Amino acid sequence: MSDLVYHVDGDLVPAGEATVSVEDRGFLYGDAAFETLRAYGGTVFAWDAHRERLLRTCETLGMPDAVPADLRERVRETLRANDLEEAYVRVSVTRGRQPGKLTPAPEVDPTAVVIVTPLPRGGLDGESVWDDPATVETVETRRVPSTAIPAGAKTHNYLNGILARLELDPGAEEALLLDISGAVAEGATSNLFFVDDGTLKTPAADGDLLPGVTRSVVLEIADGEPFPVEEGRYDPGDVRRADEAFLTNTTWEVRPVGSVDGRDLETGPITRLLARLFEERVEETHYG
Image (cartoon, rainbow, N blue to C red; front, side, top):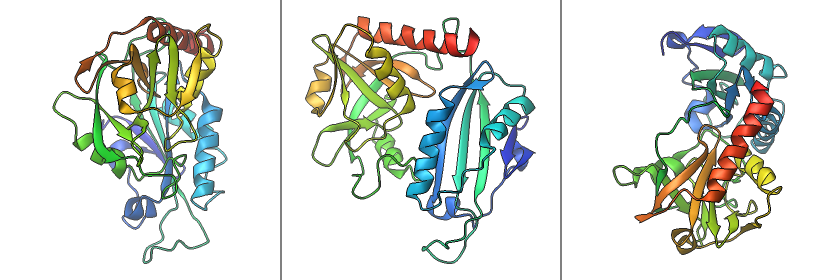
């Protein structure tokens, strides 16, 4: 880790020296936006979608001009400085240093940070970042409703997901959160898909969940296949009775679910198909 270089407020800095102020509102209050991205072959997957969501989050937080205009170039510089083509990339934009009170000042001097971590190659000749299908457990912690914190805002405040993960039994890897009415919402850091009698189903984006970029890509890919696709409202029992299920996020891509609440699931044909088609999309976009 000490050999890595990060991008902090416009400068490349050794990871061991990369810091932000203890008076930064991202540290004090979680008053910040971020995106997790993945670089394949030296370029970022679905950059435009990630950037648009980062902009929307900053607008929600009342700092619409906080995202640096040259953010993409900062990401490129960070990858080059670390001699990385395959990487996890996280970009963060905080409201900056404004000590003293909860109400933010109207003037914003944002802090922008880019950090990277090596990952294996993706695509058809790639290697998964996970070893086995995920073990998933439904937790008591409920997904914070959008009426409290907008679900579409990807902020530094991840306490909801942390509390959910703390409930997991040893060996379990992902927490399945329900909304306050008891319907399935999302994983702590993932979106859920499952297959019921040949129909691919996923919780609807107008619910209390963060619609992931990978989720959107998978839905786009699935739309071109012959099986039906449904976005709706589902109970935990619907997922437990599923024929197959998988999770999506930027680093996991399409990850099969091996069990839900102790019930084993097979990696079924739709999961395998969509995982392969996603790998083909990555291969064509970044290695072709």
